[in-house]
Image 1 (cartoon, rainbow, N blue to C red):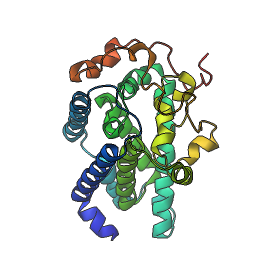
Image 2: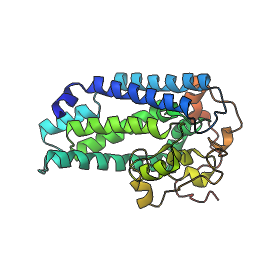
Image 3: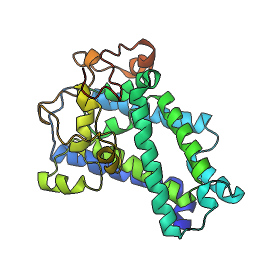
Image 4: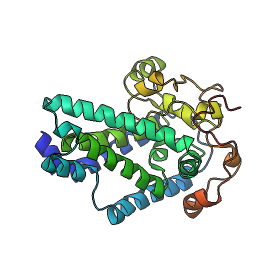
Length: 280
């Protein structure tokens, strides 16, 4: 199975992306959690345009991706997990958990460091919250994220299949937890013990600073509880909460070019910052 995943990585990742995107988009139509405020067609054009741009930039400017570096680490014998002998399944589980913790810490960083926040604002400035928001990131932030993952893979030395599975999980959960669909409250209560749910992550997209500075997890929900950044519900409730960030919440959604130019011209307003937990 592991060899099959490695050999067919591009096809498997594409199939997972299309399948999960379609499933979440359909759920949003059948059982929406919130009424959208702005034109879905316009937002989707911008968000999907940014996603395609990011994919092209990675192809053009990043000579090796995380799975490729993991293969080189395995051949060269460098990285922690290539120096110790663990059962294959345990190595995969350990690598996925460590890489997920890294993404959580990276998410803290893009809120805590002003220059990184300028990039990350492109994600938070989406004034509605749906499956396409999960892939709306500035290209420079995508390059920064890839650099962090490459450094982690070089140090950790995870199996190639672990990296591929992690990338699939990360993409899948990003679409899932940005989905604008309704889950039964009891089901959500159970699911968020094991995975970040849409109601859990939506709090993070609140206009309220103390709520923006919470629920940073993308895949595993444990880090927020462990590090004290967990907030179960938005103060105004999911139906009435405002999505976005203060300087732009009353403006029309930005177009494609303006969204990409945002880090250069943005008004950060009450800059969130990880350590400003209360918003005061």
